[in-house]
Image (cartoon, rainbow, N blue to C red):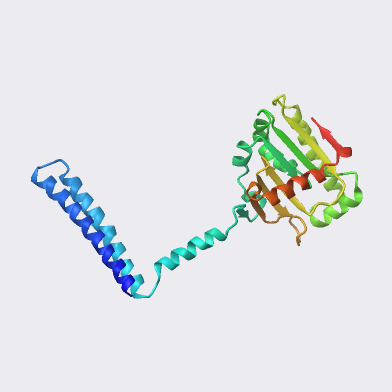
Length: 259
């Protein structure tokens, strides 16, 4: 109780000093007919009003037994519990602002069942990215010749049958090949790998730092849509090493194309 009383007295002392300071400024401007007369009055009002509001709120909290220090500590504790590598979450693919990530990057790695629609939506941005020195676009897709694999994928994506899925993969390859024909930096690289096993995730990595991840093996009735999570994998060494190794394991050199 004594501690609370001391805090209140200290606050009142600071409030009194602020009011006195503002009053002296106002009086000084009045006596010497400064142009600051109106300014002094405005400062006086602007200082007193928020201080009085804060004082009232302070006593309301104290009167109701609310410990402001404990409240602030809980808020800070909640923020500290959020890991540094967890950046954001998205309801669907379309909620992500891809433009800002493509613009600021020169390396993009994609693991997906198909990729043609995303390329069409962001073609100019990707072309600009490939004009940067040492830019790199790596895309890992399912092997369209593996019919058992295609059958498994269509079970996850009800709106496409096996023929449609093969067409989507081949169209994705063609879109990437068309990108390779555009004007780009001579040091840039484009790589396509055709994986022969089902991957249970989809992800995109920008500059080996920002990773967008979505799980494929989710229950779907009609649409192929699932939440996405954004990570900064450089904030956690083990996580960074895991995804780097995972990407390398998906690169099947026997079924690869380089441009």
